[in-house]
Image (cartoon, rainbow, N blue to C red; front, side, top):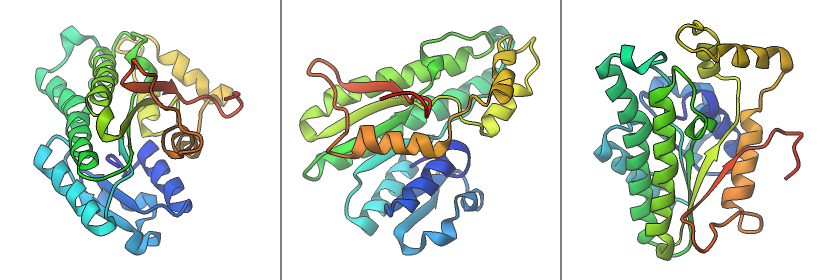
Length: 250
């Protein structure tokens, strides 16, 4: 999993570890990873510093995980950023490039690495790319974020079509609103930069957050477990879904 150092990624790693899964975790720097209790994972975790914008580094990480565990059954592309927030016309071009390099090319590199791995061995493999409601709901101030998540969803669809015969199952998963550092950043954004900020501030009073544990459970149930996972329809390359609130059915 990429982006395992904090936020949703850290929560997913915790839950997967509690389920006894063997883990390959990466973040931009290894010192940022301990919040996911790496010390408790012992020999059952590969932990690496990886910049997902670097295709060779992502490939090397995948190779390291395969050497340790023999195969990868679930690959989660979680690494992502939100900045810059504000009108596109006012954004720094360098900041826009960094955003797209992380949110789009990072997913491109991870998806390609995993696709090559699934081709190399028997059986299915589940590719989970973390998307967002922003992929389909435009929000002023989030032009590049909305665009990057829309790109992730289409990328996932195409990779799923391309790799169907090799056994790759592709999923674009919008995790809902989980109270992470990213959410704190959103709530701290001035309304002139992000006019919809009040909706996200209200979630605190409404206790309208999902938990990373709930997101992890949904991923395992719907994307990995052979007995319950959803599979793309015959004319589709991927399954796209939003994680329901814990009280929601299905």
